[in-house]
Image 1 (cartoon, helix red, strand yellow):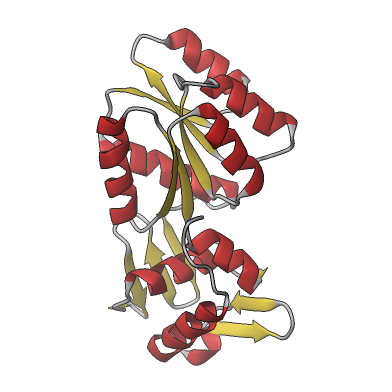
Image 2 (cartoon, one colour; image 1 turned 180 degrees about the vertical axis):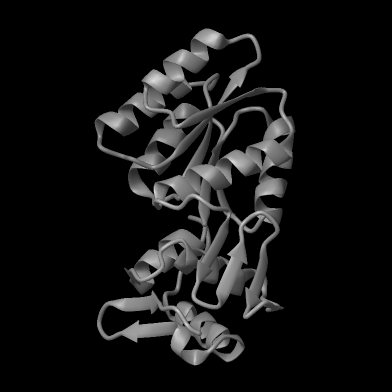
Length: 220
């Protein structure tokens, strides 16, 4: 899962980036509204953490322009504790949720997980596909109740597929969502990680749809 973190305060952005990365997300960053607007218009993200008090272009303007352009990516707004008017304006501008500063990192991560689930029509933090299960809270993967040890890249790939069970996902889509903008993106590496996952899961759990991509299917 790929997150855009938009925060101009380095003292807050650094721990947020570390927490998001530690939770298994790929993180792109912007410290001003102009860069955030550009990234949101040209790159693909599963969710955005957006501070409203940004230099160059304020967060509300960024959000409105995304929504006016038809961008539907989930947005978690960060506001000042006493800025209730900002919360209202942020929701009216198209924000999906808000969090007042200061906040606990754990709450931000929980709200972000919920936003991503809701965007895919999923209600429970425990994702399942047949005998395969992934707990988005703990990052624990099990097969028939037994833990499956995955590397960070393998987990990100499986988590993306688990959020879209039964859907065909192209290699280019996987590449866009699993690597940050400044990463050397090579869609061939997706094949490598799919191969590794197939060795740890039933091989038939990840189906190759010729010419289209991959599909996660339920296994007994």
